Image 1 (cartoon, rainbow, N blue to C red):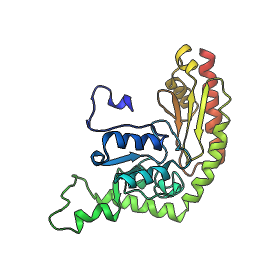
Image 2: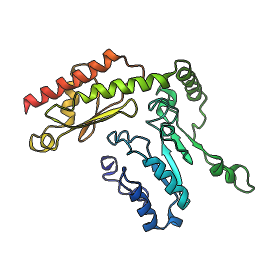
Image 3: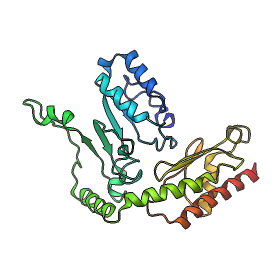
Length: 267
């Protein structure tokens, strides 16, 4: 996301970025760079903070096949999509593929305490743990912090005990249906939802450029009415708690519609 990189330059020089919806573009870039120079490919099951972009059908199956074909590690970023947000543990299971590595955070403790981690498969772990001369001597000051880990363990128990995986699938369906009701608003170009308890309402180019409307204005109007959404340059993102009720979903979307109306009236 350019807004997080502007002014810093490239943090890591030897990286490539490919379109989020084209496995063919990934393969073409691997061939352009040279497979022997590509260490890994990173992807989110659903792009979260970047705008809630859903993967095309068969995308991850094709990605997994391409990475295996060229010996490229397939790394999944499940920071947003994990721990029932997509109805399962890490989100990527929904697409029937097994990555080489998974990075996670946020949902593992429901945000009560900061915690993140990495899951690796046996092939990746083996050289570090089972072969001589390759100790894995990396760590951070707060690695394995007992309080954060205890909070996470309690949170995982709740996820299982209350079957929030099933609950999230039900909420996903209702949220998707409710958000679709915003698609006919004059300021709305697109609604993206239907995979996970998350969604995006993107404003039209006419609203953003010719009218000079900002997503921050819509955010402020919604907040004044008791609903918090996340404004990014072109869209409003929603990612409600997994235990949100049907009534609260309806309140969320009707309030957002009202906020859009209020901003439109000013412009």
